[in-house]
Length: 164
Figure (cartoon, one colour):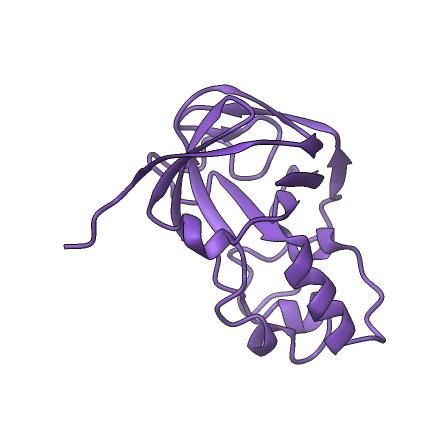
């Protein structure tokens, strides 16, 4: 697995803006983030958002982004426009839903699929929301404090939650 790109933003451009225009908080591409257990990414819009928030950090697959870009060749956008924090390659993110895993020494819990929202049709291209159904990325909780940086990373599956 490789962490290809990392994005943070100090505010919400789309989240909670139904029926209103998006805000214009800048998106910052960084090489390193500080993950704080139970709180999120220091400096990001969801930091200390809510106790046990399932989206303290979000992941998106570069392979899925490349297929999305091929399906909408006129879009010519950065993966940052998807508003996910960590862009990775070489891993099936849906397989991490319900799993505790470790990445660069940071322990995470894959909590849910990061469902694409209607804003993607504006931010990326009309039809992007429907195209990404089932492949919108991964929401996760940060279980241990540490740092993630771009580059090669070993992914260790710690525990898989049992379906009841």
